Length: 474
Image (cartoon, rainbow, N blue to C red; front, side, top):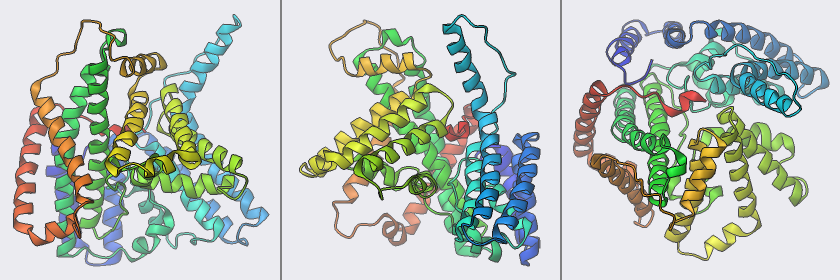
């Protein structure tokens, strides 16, 4: 169920909000309505996998009680933590990586003329990575003493299933939302207005910009890679660079807006990442909930920067290699993670210092070239396509004589998207400028523009086939 589908917009969401406002005066009623709505929302798409999640939730609750009854970070509590984390990772490995591992083992056996084996096709449940990461967060927080086990099993279930952020984040740490879950306060009028405005902004970004950029990227990336030219390769990568940002940030906008309308404040997930002046800065701004999760639950346990410089660099590289693996069971994702890890190490060694000598807009441009080369790897379906793209992107004088046809309106939308990114960069140079302040000073103009574009987005959404959010695959 997509947030901008008619089923959600005109049936599910109105029904949930109607029940919330009519029957949700008490905390217990609100908790019941939100939990039931969230389970129905996920069960609509994942009727079988939701049973696996229920069983895993029961184990989490049992393990959490065991950990919570023992001294913080004791040997016995660690044993229970290992059990809980392992059980969650096994879910992720089975559904997301079993086919990938089997295919690569088959290929390795074939090198020695040995017969391989095959496994049945395993469907990837929507949002499985986000669900598993949040469940691990809950157990680790209790083990570290950061939070206590949920006072009510329904609070933990709502933490996992809360439908606005369920399918593609933001990844919420349990200690960041535990108090909100326990309070489960009723939304006010300001929450509804601001939340719905944020939701509309997400719909606009997704349908008008991201989906159009996706069509342009698909044209280039679906071509025979051996016929790629320099211009086509870079145009395709620019399309995808804009697609993935506006698509994923649109989901975050919708999730934050929907949650706000229900009285919850979710943390921001994006902070104008395409204005970054180095790759470290980029990862502080892009998918901030994942970066924060990796830092707290992988980088620090590996030792962080407490060891030698070489160990710190290795920890960084391993974390971003893991980030690539988290994004998907395919070699391009692994290569993309390793690529980002290398540039983060270079940042620490000398790159940030070098870029600081340059004007910020030059540093921004160079950083974006690094990012876009990475996106070309990320978007490729296999390593062969990735190598062809990288070759074409670095060969301006090689001509194949076969250029892709791209409708002119795609370029108009590309220009509009680039203009938004340009104004984000420009806003940093304006004294005391703040986007929120602008919306407060000119509410009528802003709301009218958002409403008009929202209606246009819905009209386009009804006319064109629905495109799932790009991060549903992860």
